[in-house]
Length: 113
Length: 112
Image: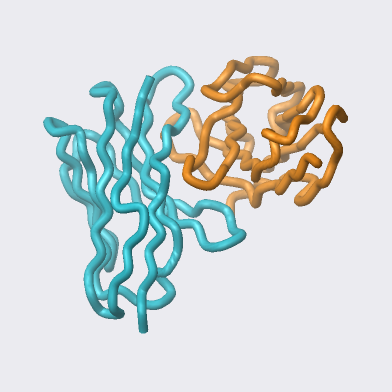
């Protein structure tokens, strides 16, 4: 089955700096890659996603890049703010069958004011 | 947030007792999922459903069963709870035409 690895497990940046979180996946048939943000005690919230026919997608301060050849994708947050502090999860799935997500183990991002 | 609710939101139970968690959606989505979240493991799939009475196992299904008799409800049952099932349980829903999943608020279960 699919295996998703996520790095780093913790990340501390100064307010205004950029943050990058990287994930690799094992199943070349995976074609959907969402990113979720989870604040303490809350549900995971979808913040951005990308499909395999796209190499990059941007939404204001966040962007995701995908390299299908290397089987890795990354989340980029620019101009970080204290409210970006949370745990971020990457995931992967296929558009067929059960469509269930396989998650990375998460990255705790702390933005220091 | 998508129209997903979970009940109960918190539960403390004893080893060996049966427990049922409920996920209810108002979105009429076809796909429903149960995940558990534990420190260092992200979220792991327990069971999923691709329609009424159509369910299948995920990676960590041992000790769990599910039922879906209506589109809007997906039940997760721990037949005989164990301490290793102490976790936060999230339900998610997904549509037929996209891969996007939306999560419910979660249920924190403690098995003593």
